[in-house]
Length: 184
Image (cartoon, rainbow, N blue to C red; front, side):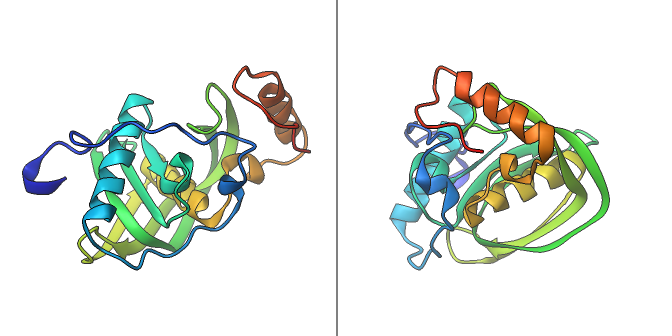
């Protein structure tokens, strides 16, 4: 996103990590170097997210266990939110809890009703090290919480309980992309 370029225009599409890969269940490391390599990672994240037709993507979803995520997501009023966050911290998640459909590029083709707050605030940094505060409502709040979960080593399936969790895991076990043992 340098010099007004379209995000991801100079990035490369990377393979996605999928359910069963350990990197998705480990907390990511803090970013300490704000240099060109970080800019390249952000570009690759955007390129990969757009190629997979997603609205958000965390670095561990392309095998990089760093606290970085990107997003291009509308809110409930169809206002587009586009950006990235380095070393995000979820500082607010409140309001009404809504169970809504949620999917993930690391669980392609699957979706489950997942409870999320309808308001979220993330603080962190830009790739150049400037402080950042992102407010989200509705669908965008869901996206922020989802991507924050990724850098914490959590996926949306971890929020599901009972039959919703069992059903999603059965679906994952039948998916052509799944290579592991179906988690409980």
